[in-house]
View 1 (cartoon, rainbow, N blue to C red):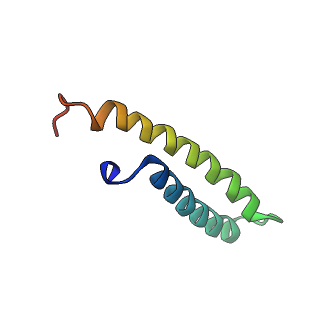
View 2: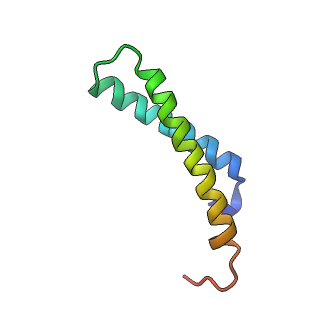
Length: 69
């Protein structure tokens, strides 16, 4: 799917998915005052990692003509 969409689209969608999942799990499992803020910070870190990981995939895996499955 990575070659069919841009890095920013993939990163934003992963950020939103991570935010929803982490928020639902945090609000159900942890008794804190603001589970959304904790989930927001966590999903920002996930989004940053995903952005760098997609850059790595684009440079070293997807565009590599010697790479075989």
